[in-house]
Image (tube, rainbow, N blue to C red; front, side, top):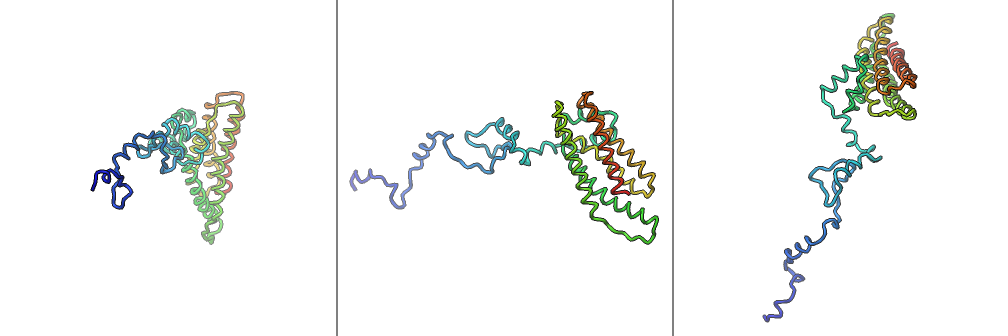
Length: 269
């Protein structure tokens, strides 16, 4: 074989191996940002782990900024920070809700307001008043008629869910927009946290409301409602610190007392 034939390119021949070294060098000479890579998993605004860093991608500041836009509302990762509390913090906030005179609840949750209490206290209260309400109704009927048979009214769950969830979500939301309209620096997450923990005392009092003594029931619910309403009103007053909107504090107290009376009249009548 002559020397000219040995100089022919052989990359197109069957069984030939391309020169990967030269092609790799050519690839490294290309600019990296120009590469069109598909990112997996899709970035929904959450910060990426070290295994998903993109070439020429966004910085941590850009990722944090993307969680603050409207898309963050539909991302579960945007709410994880509001459930990042341990048992000690949870117990401390539950105990604070039973001592409304201090009025320093907002100072305790200022660094880390949570929605854990709002979700689980409301959910627990729904099932507690629905189940114990049926027990209380049975015991009251049992006192007057010993032949009364046990029946469970499923509608108690529907009413409890609509009233408790609706109250704990809509009332703080309404106060948030009202105070923002009045020029106060309100925080919706802190309001949801406040009203969520204010419902804890109703869980405890519901076990006492099973006692089939009407006078005792009214005494228990009025005391519980007064403590819960004072917890909301006093902390709300210390938060806004504006005398011209005292009516807002009074209305919050009245609404909380109204919820207490509603629980008594509907579930423990």
